[in-house]
Image (cartoon, rainbow, N blue to C red; front, side, top):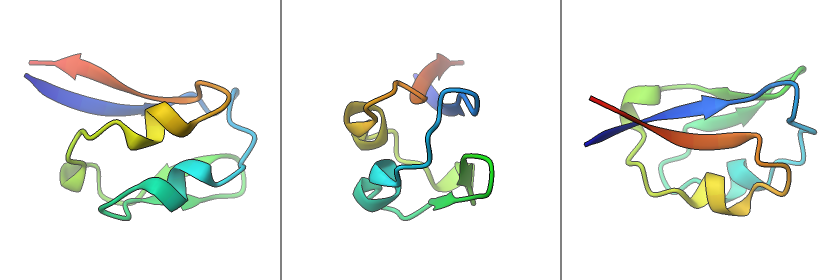
Length: 63
């Protein structure tokens, strides 16, 4: 099953932890929250989701 990366911008405090742990480097700090530069390159490893202290980023199951 495919997973889609979701960022809840209102919960993100821009700490950058997810950016540092992303093995494929598709996350970047933006002015208002975290940005996903190329969602198709996401491997669904869950490192960003596991490391986010505010639960602002997660993987959603999709078909």
